Length: 156
View 1: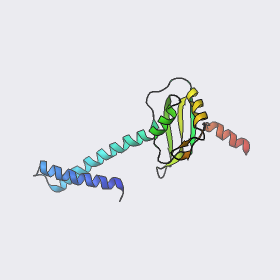
View 2: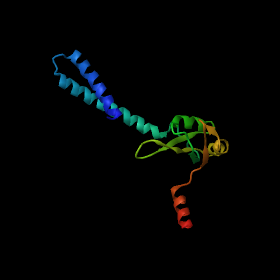
View 3: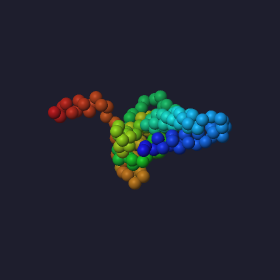
């Protein structure tokens, strides 16, 4: 069984017991079914809000010139907020996106940070080869997908 199913099942049982005490004339099966529906809706809404906010962190947008940084060798358990806090010491951070595996949902150990150009330059010089949570970070200016494709064509 999957974890979300177990959580919904447990919440449904508690919901059925609570509904039984509130409305004892209600059939137990109906009470359980109602609890399962309510738990499923709550769980799915909660999951959507965490998933949406998990990949990209963005609060106050910096409107000046920005640069996107590639950050490699990140700890797999690091969260966007921790990365934003680290890079925020060098300038305004617009967004943090930690890349995940499409199939497993696990982080791949790298990400992209969009921040002020001046802050990005400082962050690159200070945080490249920096030990962060027992990992040595690799910080570089991110290449656009177009430039990578053209480089591959030139090599071929």
